[in-house]
Image 1 (spheres, one colour):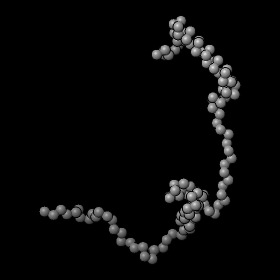
Image 2: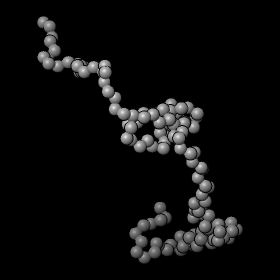
Image 3: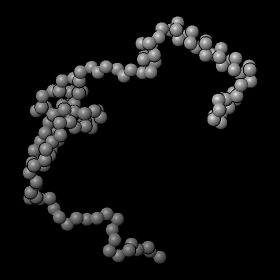
Image 4: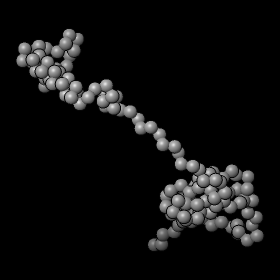
Length: 127
């Protein structure tokens, strides 16, 4: 017994239109320059505003428009100050080591005396 396809269904759609003598929408070409010196040409609709950057499909980096001036590099920014940077502005390493030893001595003495955690605290930090 032969299996027949469902009537009116095809695996692929067939268009009955032809592209002969078709009128394309007005468009213009914009040229971009990849950082790897690879030219990139993109067509846009005549009334579309082309972006200043376009992703180069070969190198996956942003290409810049050739008709625009090359942007100047961003001025160097001051690095973000961390907590450690601010502590180091106020104290020397020797002072920090002295404070660390004082705090460790205090904690060891408290642990040896059997003191519990401060009132209102529910966590046992000795575990």
